[in-house]
Length: 258
Image 1 (tube, rainbow, N blue to C red):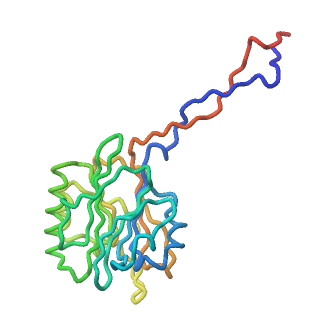
Image 2 (image 1 turned 60 degrees about the horizontal axis):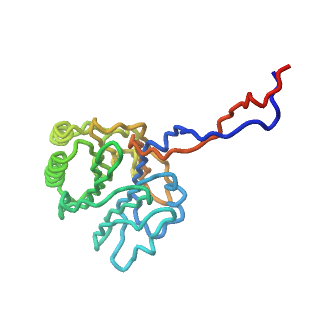
Image 3 (image 1 turned 30 degrees about the horizontal axis):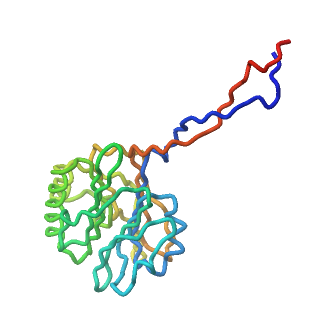
């Protein structure tokens, strides 16, 4: 059979792409955000939700001055004093809102409610200063987790907790994580101490086992930018924007049989 040239047609059909059905989240302790925006833009462009800790922002620094291309107006919580601060950027297709009712004023933390086609995910971003009493912090953290779990068992926790997760955690911390059903998805060091040369994992990503995560890991960051690496996690979200592709269809009615 000889088929006439040019007798092919395009037929749209769904193409499965992991990016259509997943959500990527990034965090980095940036050690002052304002003067690092150009570098940051190149690192985070492929992520859907982006968090930074230790932003070092103050009220006189407007959102316009820290805007990032392709991201919506950031949501931030400034310390308004020396250091600290947390911020969240997100893409326009992300259905996310802040949950002030889940937060505690004593902790540099923000909670967010993310709606996907699969379920609601509660996400928090936290910075614990080394000056914050560990016992007080973990007690409040435990309280917030329990409050969040009353609403959803899909929880993701990011941030700099200033606790080395490469070492055995104290029983009081491991018990909090275990009781609340959280486990850490990051296994590599995230912080380099230039004074001692030591490596530690201060920036875990903690999730409940109901979160369907695809992968997680670290993103190397230039040491001139921060002494922390970035961390990321990709989770299944149910986002499914159908794409079209060309399917070849042979038109046998116009073929010549030989």
